[in-house]
Image 1 (cartoon, helix red, strand yellow):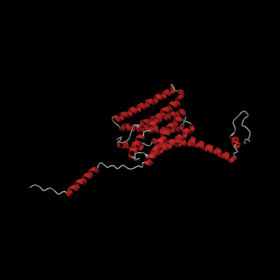
Image 2 (cartoon, rainbow, N blue to C red; image 1 turned 120 degrees about the vertical axis):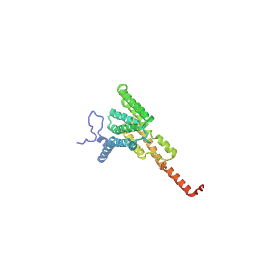
Image 3 (cartoon, rainbow, N blue to C red; image 1 turned 60 degrees about the vertical axis):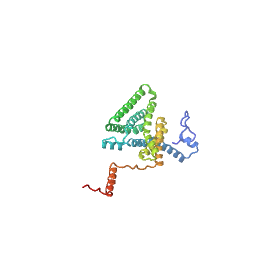
Image 4 (cartoon, rainbow, N blue to C red; image 1 turned 90 degrees about the vertical axis):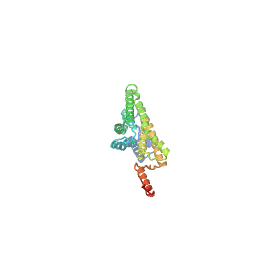
Length: 282
């Protein structure tokens, strides 16, 4: 049955029953029920909803370059695709997946597995389409990052056993900063041209939503290694969205390769019509 006000749960316990606290504060039955429901709702939002939504947004970010990579594969040429970020994305998500295993956090794991798979696909695709210095650069970058990850993991199980989460958290932070910093060259171009057409709008908006949900979740679980990179990514995403508002996108006018020839033909035809033919020599 219900406990009466003033009774304790155990003679040796200093802990008050939640009902005692509510009645001590002068709360009625309805107010206490509302408080219980509010607590349950908060726990659901912060423990389940926020990280689940964050995992979905992380998957959307990982799929962001897919259309450009598929288009490059269809044309059998690298084109304007920058392959440098793909090995970083792949190894970064592998590191976070290992970190999630140490922390026994399924949400962090599910948010990074799509990045592992997509990063591997992007890396292999762009490597196959590249040649010469670009291919050599992909090889060096992938080998260097993979070696660094292997050595870091080895150190966490031999030298720094008690600091496994801290070591992998710092390593993952270094990589995620590199991933989030990739749009900085685009931001410089926007400021120079005062035109935000080069910013990927869906990507920027998803980055803000993704980082916001992960910041809220990481603050709730007090995970500093998860807070820092997502605060940085959130700030960078907000800057991108602000630039899209301040400098609206303006389409770039580009002449096709046939336009100059057509223009030249029109000029020559007009000149021929206006200029009399020279007299023929006898």
